[in-house]
Length: 68
Image 1 (cartoon, one colour):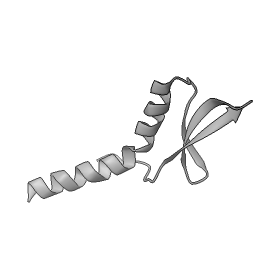
Image 2 (cartoon, one colour):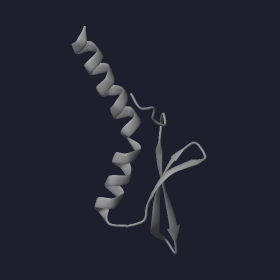
Image 3 (cartoon, helix red, strand yellow):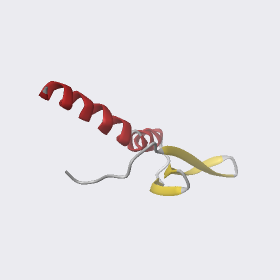
């Protein structure tokens, strides 16, 4: 299995003149990814990316339980 960057990941929004200009996914002070398109769908995508470690943990727990 490939290693991954553990969570929790968080989304931070950068603003300019009161408008969002970038959604950045962070692990502590480390930037994991930037989403620079600014539609509502892009904000949702950034939130989904940030949820990846938690979703991975949940799916691993389910497959482990099913394998018992």
